[in-house]
Length: 490
Image 1: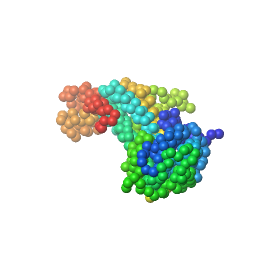
Image 2: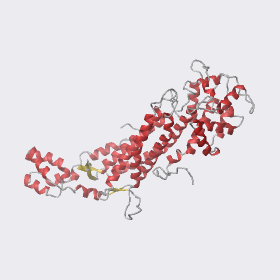
Image 3: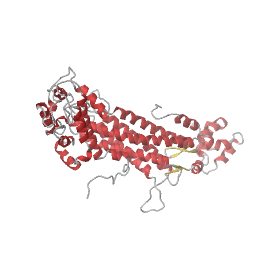
Image 4: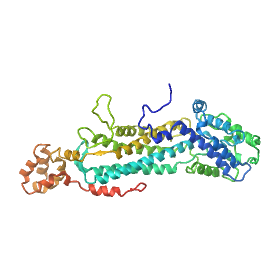
């Protein structure tokens, strides 16, 4: 029996693009991509005593393919050092052979590679989330325009309040989807690479760069400096993960050393943002990402909550295009997509709280706080990825029952416009009498007759009692909301 987690208990994200983008193999590939990018960044540097040939970057990149590595073995060996980078560096070094082994993991610490891989995975996964949010917003724009003037009951504290339009409700859902889209887009653009060395000083990079020139050393016979680097890349690391070379001193290339230039090249090679500082214990990127993901889950959860209410049998104003069945009741068509979204919205805040808790990270590298982020962030990405996929499918197939909405407006026999009636009756009957008349009325108890007795023909009761004539600025608000486009500040 396999022990793999295939999503049996979390089918909300099963089969989604984000599920694939956050799987173990995807994370492994991101780790390898980070290692290959580091070698290429070293090769892009000019000057100094130590040179990494451009060919080395090509060799490492060619070898850094996830399918060539034993993932189950990496998982088991990751326990020994506290992270998967340590055994992966050993395997990658062996995979590239003598010609490129000295250039693997030069001066980096395990957290550099792990953090960069997390950002790569998030960047890739967010592409699918943003696409689905754009789909959702587009479909909601169509619904809002189509139902701009479709009247329905507005509800507050579960009860009929005043009439509104379904177009305004859909425009509100769209506004939240756009808010989520724009927040995630901004976060995605700012996701940074990580490269600081053992304790964020970049000292090892300068020590390496000041070594003897070695670019011409033939494959298979590295110079003394490269032997030291190669051996250090294979050395055992602690839970935070750092080879012996990471602690080396050095400040070559001027006061700043080679570190900043290397980080700039590393960021370019990964396609991530260049950080101002190493952020080993400055977890703003992860916290911001977690917050934006939790907001997205909640924004989509609001829409799902409304759909769940409006699709109740006794309300019946909307329904999913293809509902789910029941194992016991053949007549049921359950709003499954809305249900999965609602579940994600309930789980996401707690996961984001873990990422916020990890902000309180001690020293220059933490134990436990950083490790708590890995699976938490993956779960959060998956939840939101599944919810965004389901939201787009839900909205694109949502069925709207205009007749049921109109019938529900009449359930209270005109009391849904009591706010309007109070305003119109007060000048005729006085505030207290008008309020008493309306407070004493109840659905189906002859409100119209009571009004006729109180005001006679002094007011146009047909107009006043028609809920479709009391929509306020709802249609105009829909028009205003639809002028907003993705990426535009509301």
